[in-house]
Length: 246
Image 1 (tube, rainbow, N blue to C red):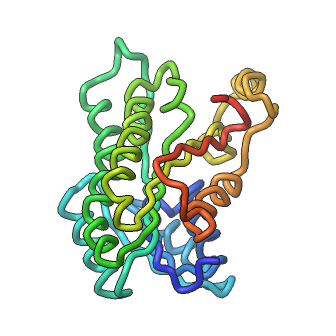
Image 2 (cartoon, rainbow, N blue to C red):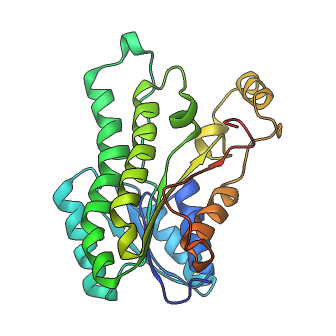
């Protein structure tokens, strides 16, 4: 259980991030529901957590902005006294074929997905070192493990997260801080719901378990890595993908 732990979940207004926030809260954590533009959705997430008896607060921040990410972490420490868990989930897509992809679309995805995670780790690390402990969980993707056509920018950002996870884990381990990554495969979300039936069938055929995952599958993996039971696990990538990347 995560009773009285303070957790920051970026990009938590919908989809996987929302499920992670709700799961951590149900296990007793006080959850900061970070959002960039979806304020209404973030407040809905907070209300759902509160209705279930949990503690949560919505907090706007564009994590791709180095200074804004610093302000967010400073606020959380000031309000709650500590940060025990950081889940870097915020991410965007700007899909397109390599030969047609603009520099702007490449940069936008790297800025949010990879640099955003770096910014949050950079600004929470000092507090966790001071506490002599903490859990950092970065959300990567099967696209970062295997690569995915039409997602050069997204795959690069998610592969970068894996490398950053391992490097940060080595740097912070001596202070009792673990850093791990979760790499989801195809998960049922608003984004995958928009795929055509033929595309869904083609993807499902590549998944050994022959089904898309649920957001709760990812959330449970994150909750485990945030728990005391995972205290001796660091620098690892946990693929929640039905076997795609085995």
